[in-house]
Structures are given as structure tokens and as C-alpha cells.
Image (cartoon, rainbow, N blue to C red; front, top):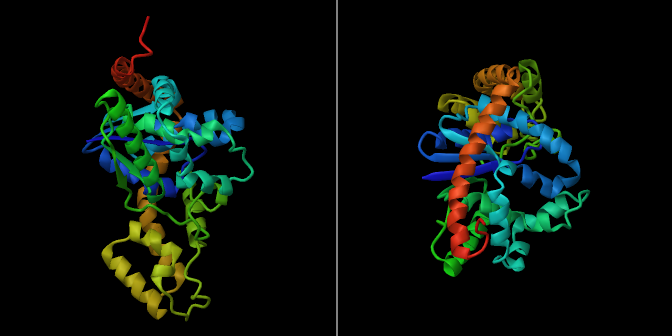
Length: 328
């Protein structure tokens, strides 16, 4: 199995990224050939006028990846804009992709509504799923780890690959979407954890800050008072219990919630202690990596060279089959 996945460098990573993406990447790198890339060109589709901040976030994000256990000895970690073949393949794929395919992608109109303050009237924003398809098929991916909201993008990639193969000959495999185990991680206010919502626990947060944030995390609104029973299925904080706590702890806290036998803060302290078991070593590794930025740059440069070699091999085949773009 060959895996391709990327992440936009838009700021520090938080627990939502850790649970929703990095846990999955860490597992996949043990059994598959993985390409994980910094999607800096993708970040420009919504933040072209904030390019400086995108560039400044690259190193911070890679530090978070490495601290969370993404291993450059097991996975190729690279910079999208460092492999110009992605842009070339994006151009060629855009020639065969109907505009109607792009307009029907669910996130196209949803993102325009969510980011009404951004200029999303550009071709770059409309066409970014084609760039995403180029990122994926470039390395012959057979699997793409995504959340449920990204499944239509993988399906579009399959359609584009199928159309290319039909026109120019069998070139690209059709990748499968690999759903993450925890597609939605709640933030402190119950909404999806997001930096823009100001409801996130960041991997770089100090231990005291993590405890303070998670201690005030939203719980079941039925439990206005200590004696009020609740339902763990309606408690945002309990979603983190399901990630971090043992089956015995889950049974104890669920029963305590339903019978009001345990208070919400007491309940959350169990989850916080478990979460810190993972976050403490990540925080320590992160501090060590941040003190050696040149080592992190070397990891990114080495991975980018490796990705470029694979991309050059792919594009040699593509150019021959399309009949244009040959070297002179």
C-alpha cells in the first residue's frame, strides 16, 4: 500500500490534528509506504494575500509532526512547492477536468460561506481539488487517509485518474479513501476543534495550560448542577475520554455521569491525566526539535529530494503518454 496525505501550514497544530490525523499517519507509516507533505500551495488557495504567514508556519508544523511520532526514516516528509512536478501535473489534469466536476464538490460552496471574509473567487480556489488530485496520483497512491468531509475529494481524484487513463492509457491507480477513526475532535466549546474558533488545545501548550483548558471544556448541558444526571453521548468532553481512557474508566465515568455519581470536573480529571501521558513526551520532543531548527530543515530537504525523484519518474511517463512536455 502506498499512502499520500498532506496538511496546510496555517499555524500551530492542536489536539484535533493529533487525534484526527497524526495518530492515523503514525499507524500507517508502520505498514505502508507513506508520503506526507506540507501543502503550502494549497494554503495559498484561501490565503494568497497572507503568503508570509504560510511560509512562517512550515517549520513549526513539521516540528509538530516529528514530535508526534512521524518518522522520516519510515515516511517521506516533503514540501509541496519544492516538487514543481506537482504544478506541471496539475496543469495537465486541469485540461481534462470539466468545470462542473469542480463546482459540485461539497466543500466548494461550504468554504465560501464559512470564509466569507476571504476572496475565494479565484481559479486557484475552484481548481484546488485538481491540484489535490495531482498530489495524490503523482506517487501512485492506493490509499488516502481523510475525514468524512474529504471523501468527495478522493472520489473526484478517482474520476480524474480514470479519465486520464481512458484518454492516454493506463497510468494512475484509483486511490481509496481511508477514513480516520476519529474524524471530528470537539474543541473546548463543543464545536470542531479549530484555531479559528479559539477553542483548541495546542501541542505546544504547557502542562498547566492544557489542564486549565480541558478543565473548562464544555460538558452535557443537562448537568447544570452537580446532582443533575447527564448522558455521556451528549458530552463533548467525553469524546476525548473515548480516545484516551481505558474501558474500565469509560464504564466508570459513563455510569457516574448518568447517575450523577460523579461531578463533571472530577470526570474530566481522569481524561486529562490520560491525555497528558501522550502530550508530555510530545511536548518534550517538540522543545528539543525547536532548539535544533536546522535538523528539522534537513529532514524536510531530504524528504523533498526523495519526493522529487519519485515525481520526476512519474512525469517522464506522463509526458510520453500525453505527447507534450518532453525535455529538449
